[in-house]
Length: 67
Image 1 (cartoon, rainbow, N blue to C red):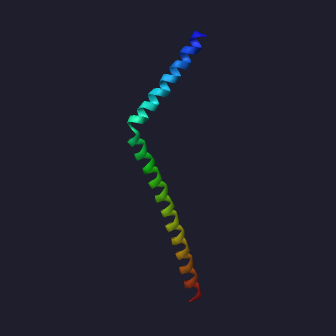
Image 2 (image 1 turned 120 degrees about the vertical axis):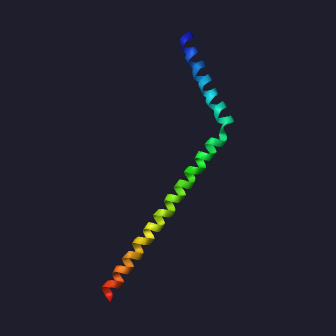
Image 3 (image 1 turned 180 degrees about the horizontal axis):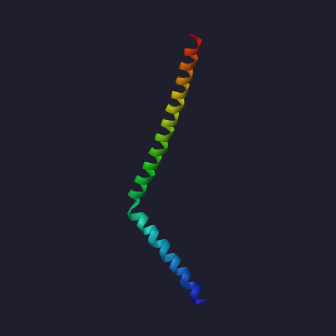
């Protein structure tokens, strides 16, 4: 039983150390999260422009065929 208790206390100390690190270095995680949001937004914008380019190409092909 003492071994089980030592494992539980070790896990608790590890969790406490992780929370302490995050508490003192929260700006790093905020920077990473902000960068990820910017990356997702950038991907969304590029996907919209790609779709718009495809539509423009399709319209150009249709106009070229009609004339």
